[in-house]
Amino acid sequence: MQLNPRQLEAFRKVMVTGSMTIAAEMLKISQPAVSRLIKDFEHSLGLRLFRREGNRLIPGAEALRLFSEVDRFYQGIEHIERVAGDLKALRTGTLRIASMTALGLSVLAEGVCRFSRSRPGVTTSLSMMPSLSILELTAANQVDVGFVQLMGGEYPGIDIIPFPAVEAVCVLPSTHALARKKIIRIDDLHGQPLISLSVNSPIRMRLEMAMDAAGVICERPVESTLAHSACRMVAGGLGLTVCDPFSATYTRYPGTVCRRLEPAVSYEVAMVLPAHQPRSTIVTEFMNVIRNLFKEEFIPQIDGKIKARRRVPIASR
Image (cartoon, rainbow, N blue to C red; front, side, top):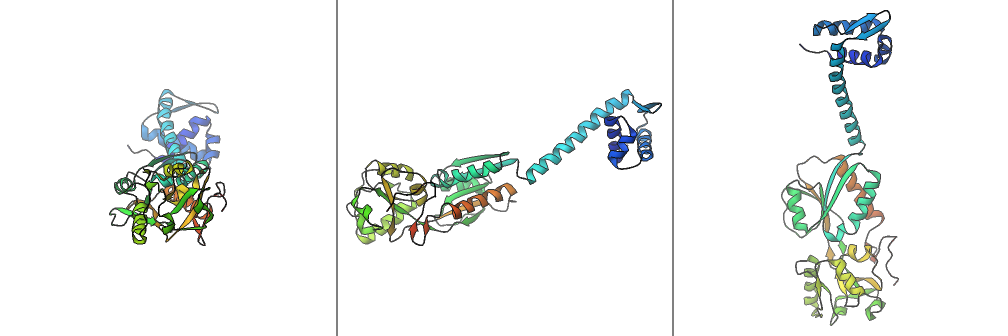
């Protein structure tokens, strides 16, 4: 026995309204057409579902039992339609983000706030971890979108969307003699207490290459794996540091200033996504939020100057 969807729909409308006339209006067909659908439905089932008392239509026990199943089926269809509509409108879903710490504590945190305010039904997770771990998870499709520092090499199974390269900055106490300068040169660092990033940091590697080439030697009072910690130590008077512009300018560090460094130490970051995977509308929307955030509120270098977010100004030069 194969059920006719139109007959099922007519049966449900009659059960809900208790009237063939109203059911016909809802289905936008004539009342005789509804009556025909019900009779054909009864015939195909081999059951009498209704009895008539004057103008009234009285459902029997079989109709009531069948209606509970039919109604559950239609409610499931309607739920699927609502979910599909929510997905289309980005009102629900999941978004898995992984980020290197420098971006996760600054640009990405702001980006998630913006995205979640406009898409409150989307469950968003932001994990911070080393770039290499992010690349591995992205290749395994365990992350929807990642944000990493580019270090060269091949990354199979990953699509890379680089941001424009930026420059590392020098963070120093506002009372330091070098704070009067608009641009800090590598040889200005000679003999200065330098709070270093970890030995695996690309910024540290490139900085030390420039220092070696210039014959610059610094004191090394302490090192930190986090640029945020290094900047906080600068605020505490331990020395100066060279770090990424996101960590340096996205948070207010009392008593510190940021200066350009010459020759420049480049800093390259990128969005990464699983290759050969369909990109959901939610992921695309979030990527656009981050792109706009970079363009509108955080472009560290513009015309050779350091620029911070409007809400977190750098101490005046």
